[in-house]
Amino acid sequence: MTTYKEIRGTNIEVLASDPSNPVAGQVWYNSTDNVLKGSAGALTFAWATKNAINTARYGLRGAGTAASTIVFGGEPPKTGKTESYNGTNWTEVNDMNETRKNFGGAGTSTSAMACGDEALTANTETWNGTNWTEVNNLNTDRRRNTAAFGAGNTSGITFGGFSPAPGPSGSNIIITEQWNGTNWTEVNDMNTGRVLMAGTGIVTAALAIGGESPRTAKTESWNGTNWTEVNDTNTARQGGAASNLSATAALYFGGETPPGSALTESWNGTNWTETSDLSVPRREGAGSGASNTTALAIAGIVGASPDVGNQTEEFSSSGGTVTFTDS
Image 1 (cartoon, one colour):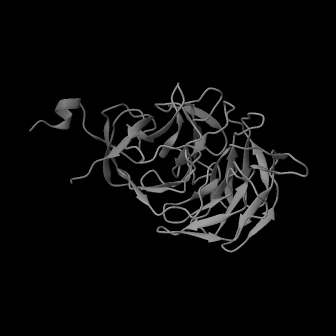
Image 2 (tube, one colour):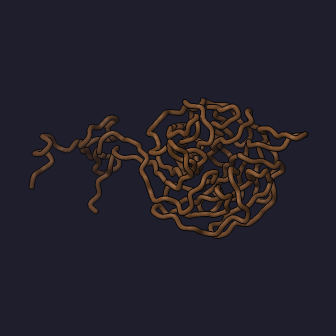
Image 3 (cartoon, helix red, strand yellow):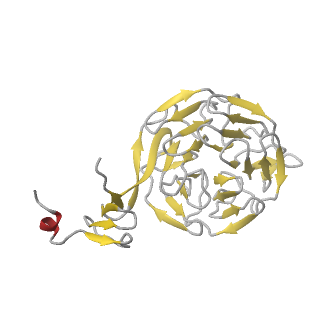
């Protein structure tokens, strides 16, 4: 049997920690972890096409991780349809009680919430993994808002959007409301009112990203009490989506610049960095995911000749350090 030394001309290195910049094919024994490791090349990220959802739509919302997600709402026509993703296939499950488009929605695949609607409403409902249940309303009617929730549908916030104003018109709002499992309470306002933004995070740590009017690159960070302006995205756009469960390691993708955009940006808690583009430009689609290394981009208005789509793409990594096992 040929040995590693005969192939590579050297014995396997014994190192106390992984090398900072290994070359492709390099193998070493990590004496701290007591495992054999190797490099599959530089860590790279890309979007890959996955199975499509059953109903093409835009203005929908997503909740969960790249391996376990639900999407709900959207149009045309405006719908309450909900679909569940198991990492491979989409399955229709129980509908929302109300049809909704461009509303606040977030959470996980087993515990989520929807609030507001394009038709200007305060109505709210929660998802328990099987059914949607109507619960207490928001204090302020709104549409084109976004939301972030904790590990369950017993805590969350919704922020921004468009709401009626005195007289015949309305306006973008800065109002933020917090959900405690029973009621909504107004808390400290955002710095910039906007619509069609992306949101990610939980009730104690969230991001509001992009949006309009006017089209903006602004990012605000919520710490559970206050909103603070942080570093802007590289490209101003509205109607983008985000991985929805982290405020310190997030992805922001798609949107309209105009036209529709395939841009993807990665957030490390301080700065936005451009990374691999979506396979197809899209806006007003759904996003899900728990980090800036795995995410789903789902449906929306897609392509260079805009059309309502059902495409799903997954953002994931290849290469990097691998650990060898005897299985």
